[in-house]
Image (cartoon, one colour):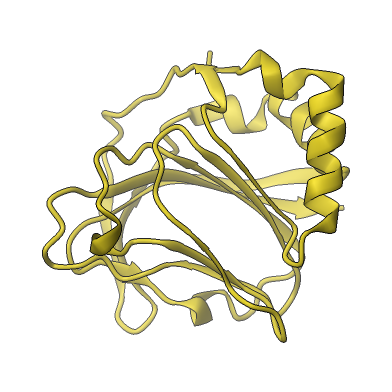
Length: 184
């Protein structure tokens, strides 16, 4: 089983994370080296998923499997964000050259916490493939790829997220788990 880095479980750290999360324009936390032990299934078979004008990518089972539903992770979410979350779904996603998702693919989403754990190795910023979060009347939040990083973003109805177009010149692929939690 994967294990959360002990630093992120300490009471002062959790308190600080909660303060940062609540004070951001778009509630967001980005945590490097989140897991001290990674028990992932990188052999998960991903299948092509295309809806032209909405997304073009590969999806499958989450690489970290049941970790996203574990008591340890749910406790971390509660203490680090102050939110009561209920697991909705998780999936592994990958984006290669020419792949993308667009913001309007989430038009009918309600309040949720989006969790992304990045497995991407050797990424060049010029290849694109950024995660973007938007909210009406606020500047968008644009996140670069960074292996081993966990990103938590609270989105409301009318807020969107996507993975920006990956350049055809990319020599690598974007690979991550995306998890959605409904906010109680």
